[in-house]
Image 1: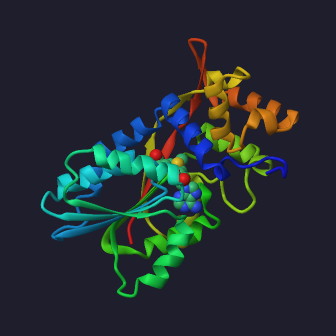
Image 2: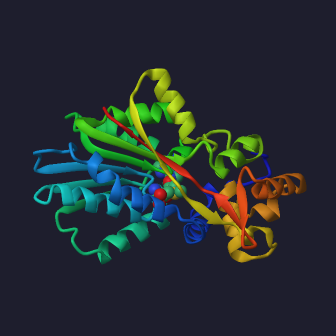
Image 3: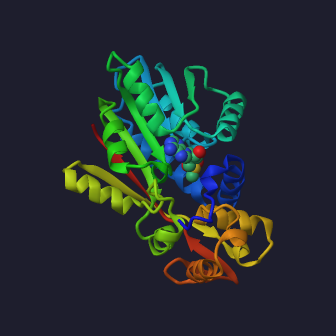
Length: 293
Ligand SMILES: C[S@@+](CC[C@H](N)C(=O)[O-])C[C@H]1O[C@@H](n2cnc3c(N)ncnc32)[C@H](O)[C@@H]1O
């Protein structure tokens, strides 16, 4: 990432605003909800069978919408079981919204929440210090989070080691064939913070797992996003969406003219988007991986 450009990830408040526009303009959460409601229940069949307390860990949970849907499905499979849900989320603003959602959602009586305002790697260090009894999790998820860690391979490996023998690890990221993949692989040097792996896609994670001989199941989650307003300078939501897509704070103001022109041209390219009724529709396809211990 060019030195003059600040990362969006360093500004929690603008990150949240950009993320909300991203959710409004894309079918991101709809396609995740479809996966969680239609595909995940079968995956959860063996998870936690016969246990009276299930342990769940969410990493990079954001505002908690998808987490609560996962907990609902888990509860439906094990109506008698208590669920202890640990949330790992570094953004105060996201956590605030997650807690608010919990307070407004009925039917969570058997679920307790433990809030960890920290990054995945801070949780890892913390866990190694505090957890002497080798407690294991029945379900761990990392949904659109692995971009923000220093070493995705080590992160997956550590959290996989925390799974109970019947547990499952769910990872959701941009698909290797998505517009995000094309954008990030093309402008990796300019957009990526050097200390994290923002250009990561599920294809990269699959390569890591294949190299280590770790089996997984994979599922494509088709999704799209209307990015038309990104091409209108000064459009508030378009600017927030551009920030979210490039992860650069106030991209249009701060990026060099060359980078701006290159990114805007690529976003319209058929490898990223198609035109539908005069709108620019970006390929936001995701992929989910389910990994056993
Ligand atoms: C794109 S959002 C996804 C949120 C949620 N999982 C969803 O899909 O709606 C990424 C989330 O990861 C969080 N995050 C950023 N860096 C992180 C890190 N190092 N460890 C854990 N979470 C992180 C962000 O604060 C944000 O809530």
